[in-house]
Length: 351
Ligand SMILES: [Zn+2]
Image (cartoon, rainbow, N blue to C red):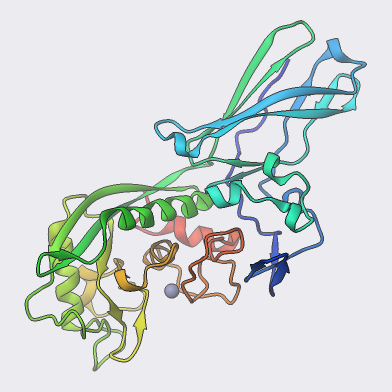
């Protein structure tokens, strides 16, 4: 017989997987990280195990279970079923090695044979999303098939996100699929915080007349804690175009972004902790995303600012590393720390 005794399966943050530095493995350079000598799956706070008790198999050395994940409505996050051998821990009791839930394809297919840590990782990492189920089946010593499942996510909250794409002379600055991919990657990253990213509307808006799209800048020339008139115009036009709830955050795709006239950036959030002028209040906590400097986790990073994370970190594996990177692999800038999560979850934009 098998029983689910946990209600706290969470997407892992891989906090014990990295330290600063870099490592080269074969021809493949992991730019951001050195893996610790320890077995990172077993060191992760969000690891889980599957345990089977079967008194009919008191003498068996091991049993086999089949494990998989299912995501309602989106099979892209399903992990195909795999057979796992559970060695005996005491007579009739069998337990798996430590396992981990991950939320994107690159993590799920991480092959540690290249790195020599966390043996058999491809079998022990399970692709999932919030509201997925971890499922298993076990044929017991009586010949009965036992099926079990446990939900992914603890105290799950949500944030709504609209997408507004600037058009100049009728031409959108980014294709729709690339913009939606930003929402998907934010959703995958926020799974670590038990926050679902709910897609609202996707709209196009015209560059406001009077805003020179090649030369405008976000920060007021007179006051660094104030938006420029151009920035207010851009955000206003975007927000006037979206059709969803007022609590939604808006990802505003524009051809390029300068925060100050000289500094081109990949993304910039009109964060309310920074833009404190009351006149800016209608425009705050939305994310400007540069179509010309698009990178996998820019929108996820900017949404963190919109939800109240102020500080950048020096750890290149963290989502709040200051520089956008083109990498999506396991060492990319895409992890959250445990201590970053309460800020994300406690802001007024998260329900
Ligand atoms: Zn930032």
